[in-house]
Image (cartoon, rainbow, N blue to C red; front, side):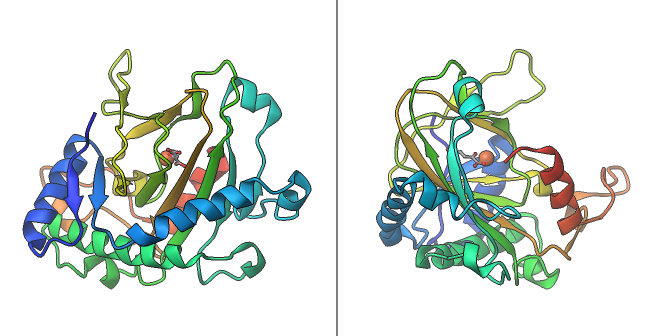
Length: 274
Ligand SMILES: O=C(O)CCC(=O)C(=O)O
Ligand SMILES: [Fe+2]
């Protein structure tokens, strides 16, 4: 399946915003092209490959603390469930600096993400600086997740189990090995899973649960080694997330009470394995 394509370099912001709105309603996902990170991608995958090929002892020296650092493949889960190792890099302004080496491409990505937020604001009939004004993306909670799926055979169909992303926006890039699938209607029984085709150089972007309309996705086992990099762009923890004015009315009141973004993320992270 091919997702709608959004061109971040388009000068026609309004048409782009309308296209994003449509993509988010129909899929919750879209491809992002001309994002400005094109030249950095090969380097990012090279760095990820060299990190994961380090001896286990070296990787374990950076073992994950407070959602930053290395998580090895779980030998039990690896056979019967999620089969991945990962390296998480936390927010740039983070005090856990040792576990937090931001590669230059991460900073370029942040710019692309901020631009996307302004288009999303436009798509919701808001001022394009809306998300800056509410304090969401000035100092966002940005996480970079390097992932490696080893590809050895196990018996579980999913190497990354079905989930929706917790935060606001995810930009994902893969090495082209297939596996990513989305389920557009999570209430439908049985669930219908569609393969997302690889589009060279494009990010696969999806909106997460903080934007309310999020889409279930997973990675299916193919038996091949696979690398991906996910960039999670979430509001500053102190930002209060509430139903946006243009999204509710007297006849359609907000469905959720306002919540501090940091509290919401903590609640979710406490119950969701990452
Ligand atoms: O590796 C992938 O393609 C998807 C990863 C993912 O969905 C996630 O890390 O949230
Ligand atoms: Fe995800």
